[in-house]
Image (cartoon, rainbow, N blue to C red; front, side):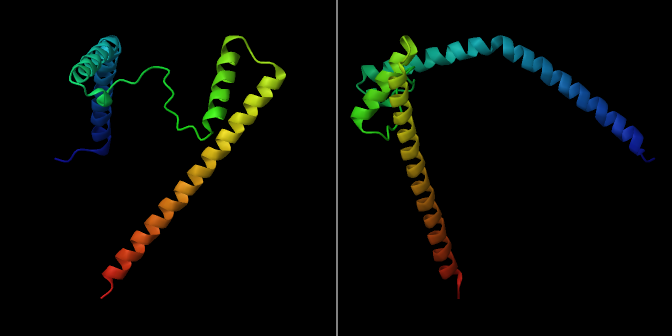
Length: 142
């Protein structure tokens, strides 16, 4: 006895609806326990950081310090410090027109440097891929 397409589609539709309802209930449960999971993860990471620190392995820190500047700073240290000072001043009390213009210039210079570095890295990667292709092609010739 064959199953008609209509019955097959109805049964699959009902199964998909049941699966989606089940996944939706799991999502609600996860939404309720997610803060607890995040809290547990933070406690575990802090405990591991303390363990590393007690053994003198401070370089293996797992947690990132909030607000730490991990940027590569494509500007010189003086210009980066000026940019950071202007940004902090702008966040706390605001900037004058001259300070805002100077901050804009520093940010544009930083963006140009980042773009140039990214373009150079892309071209180096493309050249490496082409080089690998040439080596593979030369080795595959018989």
